[in-house]
Length: 412
Image (cartoon, rainbow, N blue to C red; front, side, top):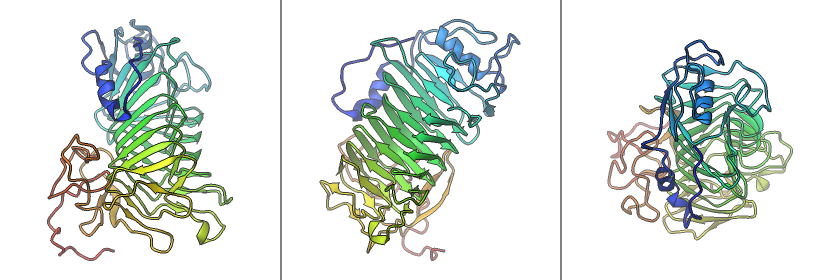
């Protein structure tokens, strides 16, 4: 089913509600297509593979062992690994290589810790769109890990123009691309309660957005992503909002050629709130005065909506509209966010949980949920905010409060 695009958005913070109103959830005409095999097959064998399920949704008809698609379909995955076996890049009929999505649908897994969609490194994993001229499709992906994708644009997902993509509780791991190893987006993008870990690109180690790729990034962790150029975590070429984001241990200029800066490369209007961008790495060899590990103002405006921790602004990053609630470091005095190791901590996606001594603890916005600049209602694991008097900065809320009184053991 192709859905006509609604009116131009007044604010990108409306994006999750627009995704809902377009019918991604609860469409009375929608079909549920259950994937019954982990094999990557196209065969009349009575089984429904993930590839066949997407074709059934694209065509709105039964396909081999899959029930007929009908409207905004839901494709349901079990706890398993779905690995690509049909090689063939640059094919757009969903017959080989990447999974070609051409209609509105949702792909729903039981959790990123137990369901994995694994590429063959020869092609990206998902190619979304394009729809018909003047039309829009709406795609949701949740509860899975997407790994081992490769491609020039979008190692895991290429989100084309006129596609509205919503990602929730997804882990992007081990993908590679020239731009956007996790997601390269030309359409509208909303990412919530997800993680990007160990992805690699020339630009945008995890996310790269074009000038049309408006984005909302919420409760997202960026860890150990790399870029040979700038934006080891993300390059934003269009307007974006970041709320309760943590970006740490990402590496820019990974080829040591003195060209590349920052975990976040800001090329448009980017607003950030309740977030941690700290302890990232710039491997440029020009000397410490030229190192810019956390952010770079690449022609855009990086504006604070309050309650951020930027560990090292370096020499080429300007935080506009800085607030008294912001904590910013510099090359001489960077701020250590004092985060615990990257792990699940009871959730389905990994996070950096703050230590009790972290300057992120109880430093988030006191505004009620839904207000301008407020923390997200839950963290990336679904833990309610706040757990104490105030919410915490970053993608994870400290919920082990036994040692919050200061009697916690010394950090290793």
